[in-house]
Image (cartoon, rainbow, N blue to C red; front, side, top):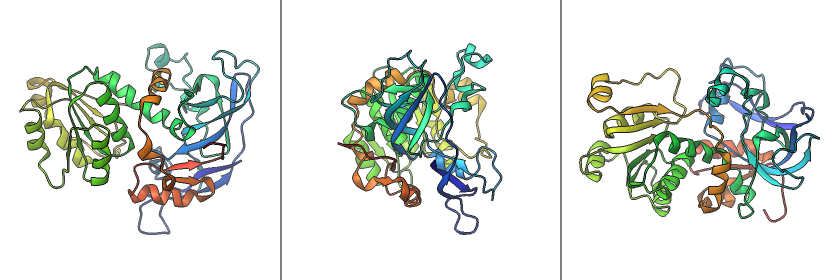
Length: 358
């Protein structure tokens, strides 16, 4: 089946076309259906910021390798076949669905310890989403609310990451929140935290178009860190207290270092972007752990919060991510990735099949 893959491992922004990371459609074998599996006709698969990192070899593929790397996990689609034992969730042929690209086995040490994001068998059902069809175990599949379009539904997976952030931050009404990075994760984070009662909600982002989107969805303050002193502005906004919750999703090392001083005493800082694995963050233990007792953590994948996340989808405004100029057919995948890498658009979505009304 034709599937979008990384076909040359390398930096997709490399100025040298000979070594630049590349994507293309490749025919790869389609797996057989298991008894509890669900076959999905894929409608949309959104480009995730991690996809170019995968092409760059961040998971161990050697630079220059031409071994295909199947890509795509932010999917939506329609159920076209159910295995004979896929009967535990009430799914039916014709259901509009999205889901979790990982399946947690439930039996390994981490699953038994409530740390499913580290499941040692999770990758067994990690099937590529940039394809006309895919097969997932029914545990991975969640029905979309009737009022949510398939274009919007493909954002269930990234939104589940943000719900996970909120859980880790133990978000309460009136907490002061700063989000650093105005990509799709940052903008959806702003929207969800605002709905949860965030105060002094601030977005640190140099792109003014992204800042305008943020203000339209309820962000109280936007700061361009290339032109303003983020620390001074943050202290002004919070009346010298700092932020109770800081979410760093830009993935820029310089930005990572700048957010720690913004944290309030006993605040929480979540680093939820994929930073270069060679980057070491300078960290003053006395200042942050003893004097201010902040909590520093991150997020990797998500637990079983997809049901809760799906219930929130109808209340979200995803219009900035699903404009016609941001939708590309799968045959135009190279142009789609070029548009993503340009930074011009807050989100790029690849259409794998056409459905009536979409």
